[in-house]
Image 1 (cartoon, one colour):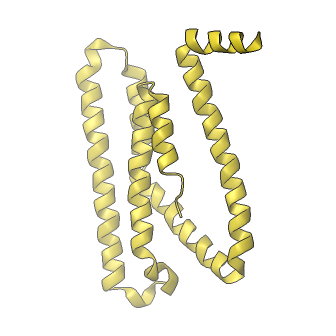
Image 2 (cartoon, rainbow, N blue to C red):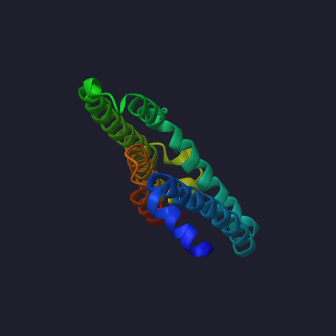
Length: 171
């Protein structure tokens, strides 16, 4: 009996069920991230955990390099999404967002190459040793965040979930 009610709910309220599905996946991801943190701390030991924390800190700081472009993209498109007169405006926002993300990726890559080959002695050995991994993770995360924002705006939650699931193992 309850199974029929649940099936009826999910077939008739599609966008609501997609939202519930996306929210459940998001919380599951948070729980798995917490478990992953405990396991990483247990198995790495003090020295490697310090290196891991330093690398994660660098990656988190790099996430700020897009200067909130994705949040602005999300806000502007969601406000003007259903307005037929603003289709050109939405296309301009989309292209500006993509170009600004690309510019920030190029800038971070240029700075990292500058650090790697010209200022090598000033930077911690562990950061310099793993610099290519840091940049790769940064680039993949920028692409992931853009795709998640895009799919969420156009209510394609299952595609957003698949993209998010593919990018789960960061480090």
